[in-house]
Length: 600
Ligand code: F6R
Image (cartoon, rainbow, N blue to C red; front, top):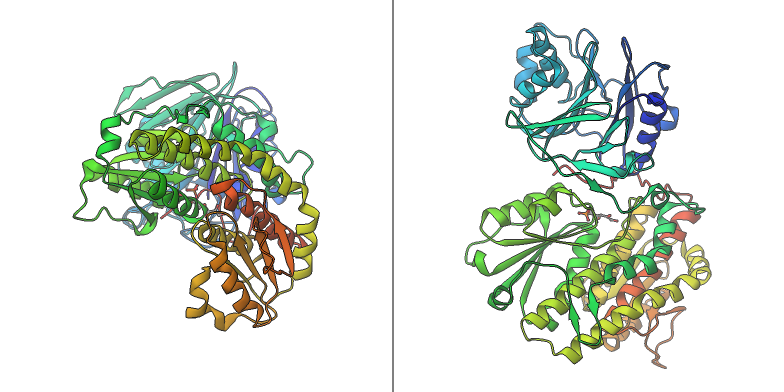
């Protein structure tokens, strides 16, 4: 989704802003722009790639803002790209989010102001123009205008004759970076982490004024202090490190990522887990229901966790697509724990669902990768999955880390609720600690997957089947393949095939079957026979050594108990990657998709 960046300081401003735009590319965009300020405002913006963006020459600039746009209001044209300027071309504005009441302002302003775009964002520049004309300074003007706007937004503004950048946040993330002589601004830390790891996350209602090393923040008219935090990863974590694509690098980072999810949280011998939660034993015991809210890949991690929670923590679990979520009548909010599963911590649908749950009085828990994200700050408790930055649009390592972390939560709740003995807990924890090694074994078999993927790359469609823990993995395997290869791929519960989807199966539709521990593999084998007898080639992703199981290709999963489907999923990630690579697709930035989906 759209990305904001900004810099104030004495270093090479245009290079810093241009590079930070490149660093934000992964969020997804269709146009980009930059405004540099010296004694005048120099703006360039256009649709298309950042590499093609003309960077204005402004060697004396000490302040600049930039933007990557993912179109919502208006097509991805040069005119609709940000920054937007006022009529005098002395004010420039970049904006993320949506201004709900922009049409009212546009109508009112149209007599005296010339609009050059179809966007909701441009009204902000013209409203600030009016406020400055009345004698306000830039900070006051921004505060005044922000007070008039409905919707969700993050904005950054520079203006000729005014020092630095003024930024405002309402429901859309902004983070400030600090070094000895400069300040950085961005939608996320990746934009500037090569310069500084010392950051301040803005809160809703904050107005910040960045002037070089000095940053002042107001909220509700008062100056407020916000904690500075240190990001625990550096620029190298967000680089490709010799891989052709971020996605492949991130698939290969999984052994490390899942180890991080476990680190310092597990006592295998005692069968206990410490997630630093504020849930008392009494609360855990009183729990009536867990509701998991999430989107996309995170939703599938939630489906996986639901099976484990019901089995090992003896609690009723419902999993909700966040955009469909309602806190329905008949539920006791005090005895309902709502768990938001979200890599970014910023997904608008999940955030809205989290707020509905909190509004209804339920206790909330965020399971996220992103320190300082909105959901991490709004939830009553947060557990970080500790994957490190994920730049490829397709989620890979974060899925594995989410499932690992949710399994830790399962063991924690199971123990608190006396649903799991310490021996049973130890067994699960041992299985978890074997996952990094098992994933490594799969990664070592990549060439087999590549050959299989290349052999089937031109198939008409791909079907993924699995039961129980294999079902969310089948759904995730299909999602991964469709989003990066653009092929038709669908995941089914194996038992559902004969109720309709079997009509689609032909010799040109490979079926990828998940047959591991926790997937009722024996039953899925019957379904494998059904598709084989219709001529479909079958790729078995399996830890079962059933002599009746004959596959066109067998991909072997090491034995790690309930985590085997997560390990099997690594094969599916590699399969998707190599099908897409064989077709020359834009793997890290698939068409129409964005990394962090901050609109509903
Ligand atoms: C798919 C993918 C998406 C995200 C979804 C939720 O590869 O990445 O389906 O999982 O947009 O995002 P988060 O986890 O950030 O809430």
